[in-house]
Image 1 (cartoon, rainbow, N blue to C red):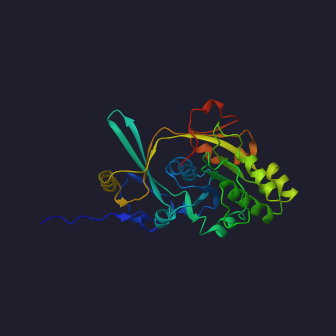
Image 2 (image 1 turned 90 degrees about the horizontal axis):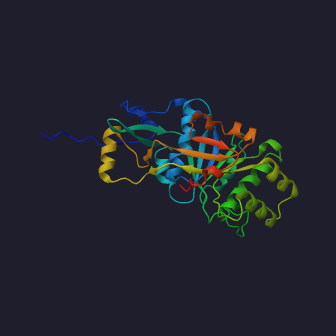
Image 3 (image 1 turned 30 degrees about the horizontal axis):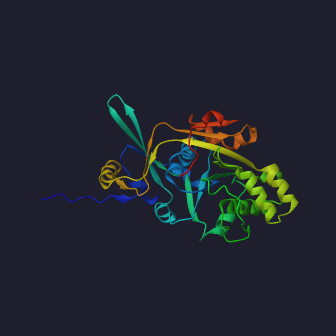
Length: 302
């Protein structure tokens, strides 16, 4: 008689208790109770395989203690929401006996919001005093000044969306000096203007009050960044079956990475360094006063 094939269950928070293999690191229950501290624009493989990976690693070590609200413009909310924001990082490394693989279930993402469907919920995040960081998946098209309306639901451009979020935060906290955000983004050397200059100019175009303009410049920190890690989230059906056999569950969002990683964030501000405490969890995260020595690395593209 042919043995009945076991169909792998989907990776969800409820199904974590079904995972019996010791080859998979499962998040502790306390991780899910951590506050939301990061707003991340994008859900691409590099964002999940490096920034979210760093934050998850720090949370596991009790260092950062905060989770991510991920913002998407496409339909990526469906698989991530179906899996309760969970996904597996398969890290491969070379060893004397061949290639080794480790599996960690990443629980850094608290929820995923679609900007077209949930813009009001995204703006509500601005009212959260524990929300201190924005991680932005930017490209050349995002870093061009375009006419936009900060009051649209949502604004059309990324700088417009960021400006709307910051303006909502300014209004909620009455312009308190300590209510600013740390914005980690990617500006290539070919860009004529940085994200901070574009957001400020857009604020002028929208006729926002002088008090906000002053708060925008004085209380917010725009930190350029570059990243380097090989990530792969498109795998063959055969690979998928092999991985499911190793883990015992189905994961539509599994990311395969190399062990090498480097994420350099440009800042020399002591208060910013304190906020970015997740950098203490891994030597691959570097807080540097300048990115010139990291010029050959790639900006975060997802």
